[in-house]
Image 1 (cartoon, rainbow, N blue to C red):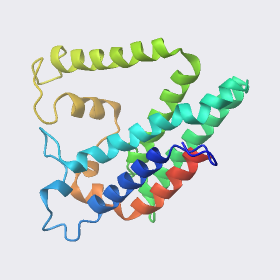
Image 2 (image 1 turned 120 degrees about the horizontal axis):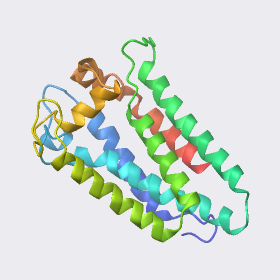
Image 3 (image 1 turned 45 degrees about the horizontal axis):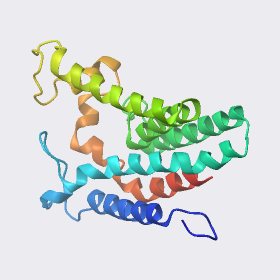
Image 4 (image 1 turned 180 degrees about the vertical axis):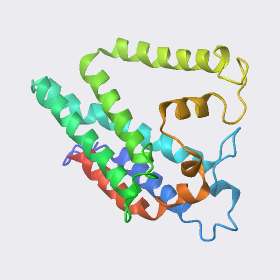
Length: 212
C-alpha cells in the first residue's frame, strides 16, 4: 500500500489490466474474424477471455476487507456497514439493468442475470458473510460451497440427464431455466453482444461504486 493514500497499488494495477482485457475481448475488431484467445470457450476448457469475469470477482473480494477492515477496527456501527453494502449492491445491480436495457428498455427481452448484476449479488453475499463471520468460518463456507457444488454436479441428475453428465447445457442450463432467468434469446450471440458497447462505461461506474 502507498503511505499517502493507503491504496493497494497492486490491486489497482490488476484492476486496470483486467479492464483493458475486458475492453479488448468486447471489441476484437471484426466479429467475423476473431483470434481464439478473444472468444469464450465453447464448453470444456477455457480461454483468456473466460478469466475476465473471475478476475473482477477476485478484485471485489480483495476490496471487501480493505473497505470494511478499518471501519470495523474503529468501531463503526454494523448497521451502517450493512446499509453501505445494500446501497452499493443496489447501485451496481440497477446500473447493470440500465445498461442491459439501454436504449430501448424492452422488458420482455432485458437480460436480468448480466455481468454487473452477478457482481452485485456476489458482492452483497460476500460482504454480509465478511461482516458477520470470523476468518475460520469464512474458510469453512468457501470449502463447503465448493463441495456442495461438486456434489450437485456429479451426483444429482437433472431432468433428461443422468447423474454425472457434464455435457453442455445440462446442470447449469437447467438451473437457469428453472429460475426463469435465462432464455434462448439471451444466450444468442446477438443478445450477448448488445451490452458490449457499454463496457468502458460500466467499468468506470463499478470502480467508483467500490471505492466510495
